[in-house]
Image 1 (cartoon, helix red, strand yellow):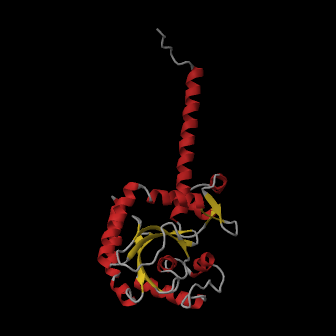
Image 2: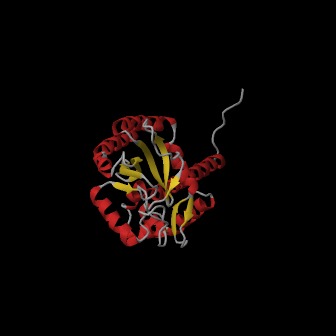
Image 3: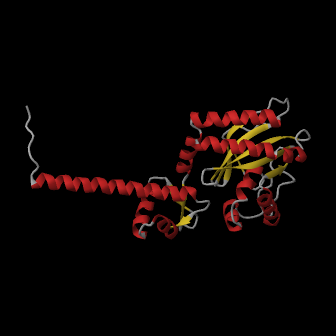
Length: 272
């Protein structure tokens, strides 16, 4: 039978060193997670100073950890190279979490009831870089419908969900993410100048919902409302759209209270 031996000063010191190393690893992992949380919760790229201040890290430590995250593909620098933002890899991880069966099944159930009430196709959309991603879509049973597949990306400046996301950004952020004018035209009603777009964005900010009056697709009207997380941050848009003249602007606006009620139901399901 093996015998138990007493700890010698040498073995005791080795265990103490191992404990310090393990504690250091744990502490470092915590700092990395805090950095990712700060970057993920920001609506725009953050400079090193902001990240280090928010977490309470020394700049050299934060810089070293950020470089590691950049090297591993979880974080990327913006066009100027001075600010940090979530990478495509990191965004896909978030999309993957939203797409898990347990979360998605609740979302789809809410959306199906919404489609039955509104009578038009409904979408659950998120901001993915400088585009809108159609994450979930429930089709109406109406014979005439617009076909947009889940997983499709659409522009920000001419879609209801896109303009809704822009309404929570500053003018500088909007211009940085949308790009130089003239903005790409998709229909005769697409706003291609910032003077027009910013007027529309201010209106959306005041009313709390966005409309797309045939700006992205001819003969298509869409309305979108925000979906917020536990910190009251907008992370998604719930939208309904249909062909004209069946789904008019008046009907789209009349559906806003129903969309908001469904969005609130989604928010509660995510917090459970």
